[in-house]
Image (cartoon, rainbow, N blue to C red; front, side, top):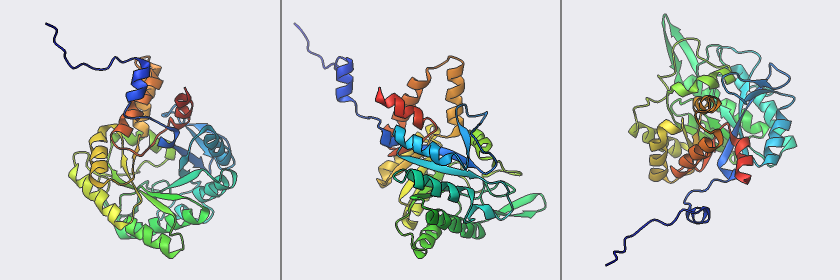
Length: 326
């Protein structure tokens, strides 16, 4: 007597395509771009193969070509010529990011421009806020920092940014940024909050790219403990209550559980940042022939979208535009 058992569908390519639950598209990716006042032409970042700092005179054409290839949005980071303790370059009317936004919007008006709003690239000490030194100890002054962060966000909006992205993790900064934008007449400018940003070892190459390593201490006093998940949900809830339009989890793969819990709990637009260290590890493994880069990247991006990401900030965005065509 034959016994009929349930079985899986035969996994031909046609069947796989028909029943695939998670599909990637060009709308899923945001490309980070580094613009520097110090250089005139592209300069490769040694710890991030294939990723460059770009000069102010070329950033618009780089962004325009990215948009023409299918990239829908870029996230801008600025590297100023000079730094000081008050991060004055962060909110300067003709600062490096402000000028870059104007040029990009002139040449690629339909490209969504998101600007990183933080002070670390502009402070002489490399911390994300104003610092007071007490002998061998230091304290980040939250309220003074938030005031400068809000001022920076308004300057980015005035230059034409579609979304500002506070990444500092200071307390109350989302509410302050929202109030400052509204008061300045930029009520339509959105906020993408780095709501769950962990004190991770995977940021190392980025600090080379943005030239922003702390000159003393570390950022554990204001970034999140990697061991804390419930705290991450509280941080997200606070940022949403203060006016965040999009919340972001950073890094990506070590925090898939956080990403899933945030999306399930709040059901609000949720992004994730696949960071520099994660990028560098895949590149290194691929260069040694241990993995196939394209297949690994597509698997990673699929896992992030499957876990709940509405979009993914990542350094392969241009490659993904080409890979998805095939």
